[in-house]
Length: 248
Image 1 (cartoon, rainbow, N blue to C red):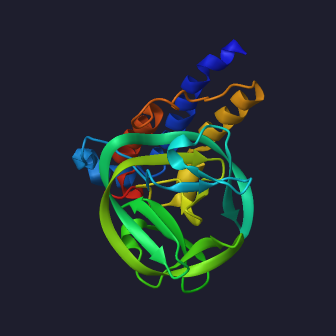
Image 2 (tube, rainbow, N blue to C red):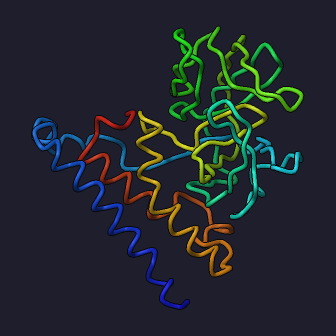
Image 3 (cartoon, rainbow, N blue to C red):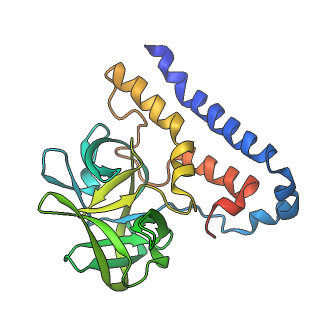
């Protein structure tokens, strides 16, 4: 059991290996960017959802996002079905810092506040699911919403930009969750939701292992603030080796 203490370091090795494989498969693209990929801001922020967001739990109750804990059973939508998923960790958390949010309001009356590059799925014109950054959402785009405990698609009728205090970035097993009964991705800054979910595989694996040994708060970040240090490492590698996969 105590050997599990070394697992976080194994996670890092797996993650770095994934980035290395991804990098070597596109070395020509890296050579084109060179060290200019480091032209981003040195301050890394994941941000995501505003502190006043409510998360729908599997038991039907709502829980303020700030009080989410590892192991919480929450609802999400997968392949047009309402399913349960588990909260793994907070990728980023700031209680008192302010951030700029895009507040999306749907015809059904649902509202969700996300930071500019946080991903949220819409129904595209061909009927397929597409993930867009919050700042790229337009009036008329259809969001997935939970209305009277049933899945519906509702168009965005209003978009406002506002500053709020506090932001949280929960990671779930499915990579998605219902925030104020609106389906959203767990990821920000990544252009591809599914690729981001792939890179989270080591975290999901570690979480399952620690839960098997009845360990709570596997990532020791329930009480801590800021971007989780492993996520910071992943961002640095992505910005250097694969800058085209991130919004800038």
